[in-house]
Image (cartoon, rainbow, N blue to C red):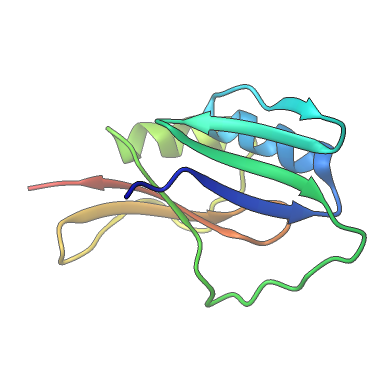
Length: 115
């Protein structure tokens, strides 16, 4: 079994597509009216419209992306105008990470596993 797709509903399709395209450095493509997709490493993020904003619990599950160099990604994201509350941190379980939120408040982590 392999994860293929994650659907994210939003009231702001254009803003979310622009944000994820910038963060993931991949095009956000409208497949059919109202359905946009970004594919990264075989997993597709699908963005669809909802008319009612759903509150996001700050402790809820988020998206985690493994990257080669968290420190470089941190600099790139800051330069791209992404708000990140704190610099990279290394956890005891050998993960170096940064966390930030998308325009709807969904949590995103960029993680690099270190020795």
